[in-house]
Every structure is written in structure tokens, then in C-alpha cells.
Amino acid sequence: MARFNYGVDRSLKNRINPGSISIIIFFVLIFVFMFAVAGISESTTDRQQAALENAVNKSIVNCYCVEGTYPPSLSYLTEHYGLTYDKDLFFVDYQAIGSNIFPDVTVIRKEP
Image 1: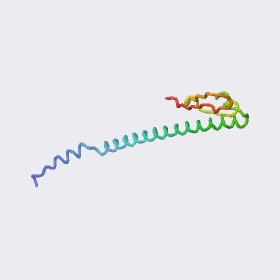
Image 2: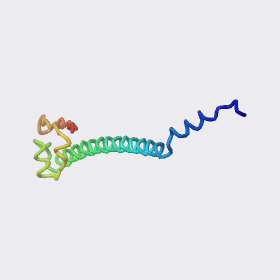
Image 3: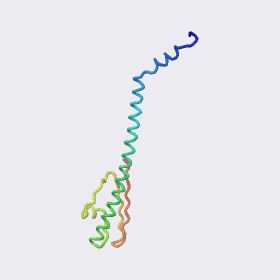
Image 4: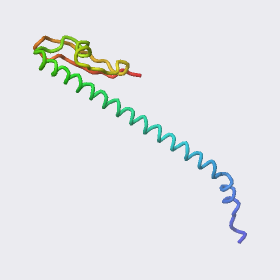
């Protein structure tokens, strides 16, 4: 039985500490968790942008139904129709073309 060298197996066992394996697994799990949170945050911001576009369009149509003309500006919608949004997160480009033509609205997300 002396022809088999068991010293190599024991030295590998001594090099890999069970505590270091658990620390590596812990950091891998933390990294995966951070990646998941970043993906969820991006998805939430996309949904907020879509909801803002929908809210602006509904406010424009509501104004047209009540007053018979499209709103002259975005501030008119915020003052008279209660439109609110996060101005630090989104930029809304509102261009009124005429009182009887649907305005051109673009919602752009600002970079952090």
C-alpha cells in the first residue's frame, strides 16, 4: 500500500478551508442579489415612464373633452388637471401645435 501517495490528497484538503468556501458563496450570492435589484429598478423606471406617458395623454384628452381645445402647455395640465410627475427623473417635452390638433408629447428619462 505504500505505492499510493496519500499526501497529495491531504495537502489539497488543507489548502481548501470550508470557511473560505462559505465566504466565497456568500459574496457570489450578494453579487447575484445586487444584479437582481438593479434589474428590478430598471424595470420599475420603465413602467413609471409608460404610466407617465399614459397619464399625460389622458389629461390632454380630458382637457379637450371638457374645454373643447387642447391644453396650451404642460403647466396648464399640472395646474388645472392635477398632473404630477417626478421632474428630477423625467423630462416631458410638450409642444402644442394648435388648439384643435393633438399636441406632440415626448417623455424622456433623465440619466442619474
